[in-house]
Length: 271
Image (cartoon, rainbow, N blue to C red; front, side):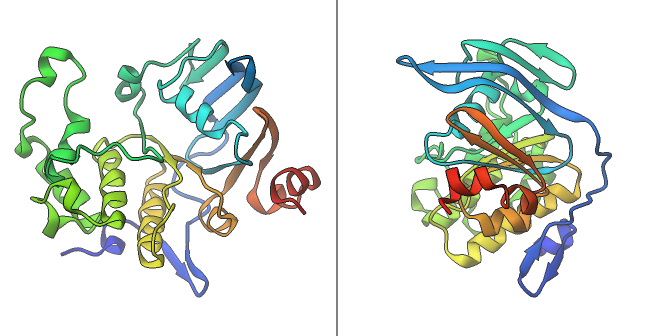
């Protein structure tokens, strides 16, 4: 079986795996732009006239206190919620909202904090489901394993699920279930990945494996957005940071500089 290091290119340091801060892709452009975005729930603004840019080919840490609007923003950018107002631009295409059915067109994939596995389906079928056709009639047809064989085998190797491929999702441990969720987004071969707290509840060895996967994606020039509360992981994996506070942009930039920002330290870190 191939090791992750044989599939993805990354580097390790004594403190643990560290992503390459200069993956092979041009910087200087924004792959997603949000302008004057607003979303309210029962009169409370979860996103409040937010304007922010997501730079292309960077690993972006999306951080902020609970209730700051992180997940709401990701839900809007992945079609789970429609904003009340504002504008979203993805690769120069302006929209008032994004539909979940359009994610493949935009080459966007995401994980969910609460998981979205089909418990009674096998690992293989869970991996193939996201690449099924969105069209209602086409989605009723069985997805051919052979059409995605190479990608499937690679994802099974990366996520250490090869020997579990015929098990149902409900039979897996918590850590393997997390890896299966990540495998589902890898199957989509996207350009933009959103990871909603991918390290939550994981043992250290699985944390390192997820880090390797994220670094591998970065080495391919993918744009990665990570919602995460562990600042050590943010500093290890991310080369850009966006901080939200009450639905507004509080700070953005290189993690080391942002985390020294007085407003960030007071509102988020509490120091």
